[in-house]
Length: 164
Image (tube, rainbow, N blue to C red; front, side, top):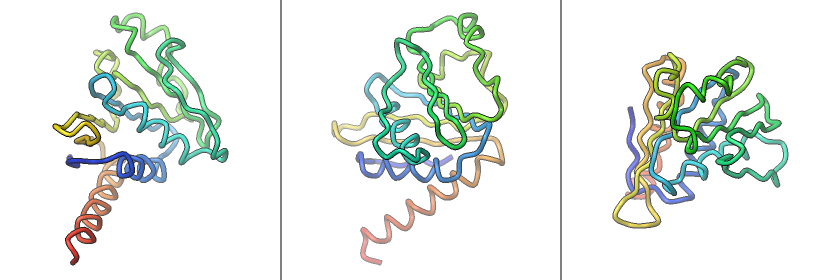
């Protein structure tokens, strides 16, 4: 697990881009955080990093629940905010296509449907409205390289800022 403290929008974009650069078919990213914490912001920049179209519009699928983007591999962005019952989620057929990447906002609503292997990203508010703390975790070896890459970026960023 890694926790990044006091992350601004530019740094969150970089974390999304690092994650996207190492994405793979069947990837499952579960996003947690309060309303407005930055889950959709993260997803937007992840999808933009994967897309061949730099002008792609990525918006929260709160009402349609799911949006699929023509990235490589294709990406499913799912927002479970309006669905509190895991039985309803089963009908969405989430995780049925191993060739897609899945980004799930409000993943706590998955309940018993949480996949065996996933990357968990928790975004928290700080005492400064423009900054966030981001915790990234996985028990799975296939996600560990992403966490290591983000940690290397963090260390390099800290070294640049400290003048070393």
